[in-house]
Length: 106
Image (tube, rainbow, N blue to C red; front, top):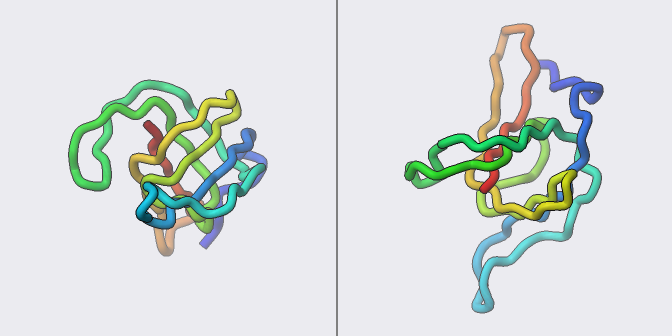
């Protein structure tokens, strides 16, 4: 299986992976700066991880092994911090298309 080529991932984002809730609110892992990504900041209607229709204001394509579950925090190239609504792994076993992770952001 091939991965999405790095030369297509022209942007860099910072990912703070969601670890769960604590007594003081959401808990995040250490920031991972400089994650290669392709970012499109446009408004789209998507479904969140619970199936509700929500508005996404940024979509991010990154490498398939990026740790970025729903509820994680992302800092986009514009400097805007956002929350991950959903993350979907795209694979096509046996086909000559690259694997990637698609992240929909609030």
